[in-house]
Length: 71
Image (cartoon, rainbow, N blue to C red; front, side, top):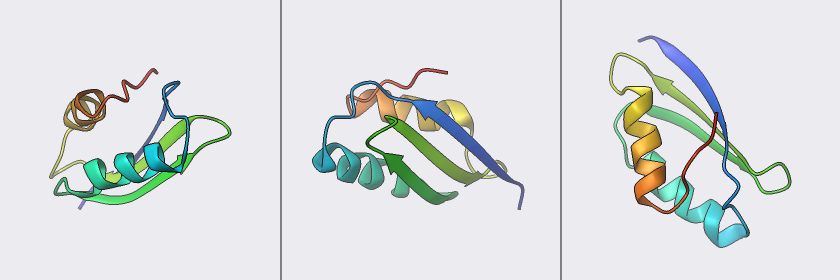
């Protein structure tokens, strides 16, 4: 297991509903260990196993859910 942490700025986060949607999308991906959404800072922090999932897969999942991440 090779745990990595990634934090993205996601300007489209507006409310708790957004946060729940992001949790649902990311936690359904194999290899994701932890998801934190900060409504104030509009950030998403993900801890994941890099041996199971690539960063690009997480970014694409966020984008597909309507929450395109920025670096």
